[in-house]
Amino acid sequence: MHYLKMSMEELNPRLPAHTYPANLQCYLRDDLQPGLKVPLVLTMPGGGYSCCAPHEGDPISFQYLAAGYHAMTLNYSCAPDRYPTALFQVTASILWAREHADEYGIGKVFVCGFSAGGHLTASSGILWKEPVLSETLGVDAKLLRPDGMILGYPVLIWGDLAHKGSFYNLLGQNLPEETYAKFSLEKRVDNDTCPAFLWHTFADGGVPVENSLRLADALRAHKIPFELHIYPKGGHGLGLALGDPHVASWMKLACQWIALV
Image 1 (cartoon, rainbow, N blue to C red):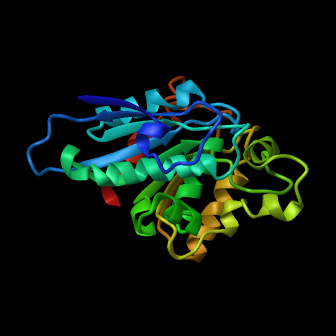
Image 2: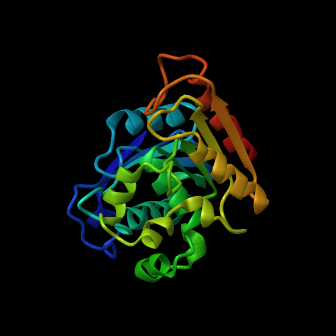
Image 3: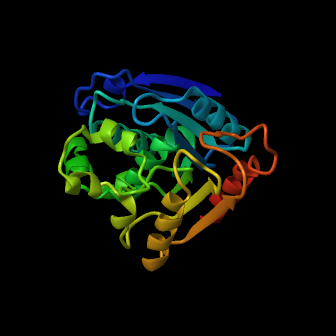
């Protein structure tokens, strides 16, 4: 296995400055036959945009690595850094994977995230065409679009069921209502949004299941393929859900879905 750990400055010198520490850890297979390429999964932990929860980072990447994929964990910048700092870091990571595809045998690039990291992940799959991203990185926007996104109990919607702390950490407090509503991602889905795999628990008391349901509705309206799993029991922040074999099935299902995309 090739292991690389990069600061954001090493990842891409065009990235804007940031305050919160950030790094990209790469776990790249070195056992591939020449010319063979396999998918890569880039994982973003949750943490309310205030931190990156360790159990939703490398432990997830190691499972993807064990499944035969390349894997990367992005510990992205959180508050006090604001949007679009973390999204720049995700798109730069996707770009790095694309630019090194031949060197390491990287095929399709998938993004995976949990809770607020799910919001960041969905942002990369939905907002990839935002001009500021491609203009800052100096590339064709199409290089920044992930091939698919895997969302675990994601923060997505603004309104009565919003996880407002995540939105405040992402954007700042005391802003106009329409500013927060702009990042209610189910409203930003369009025909160029990438395919999605979503999982949530019905009993999630931290980020209500409606976050995933409403995104699924939006994806369906735009004819974007998706797979959705709602588990009846389980709280928020489960990660691999090692204590619940039923919910833990999401990882196997996600890997099966990757093979279909």
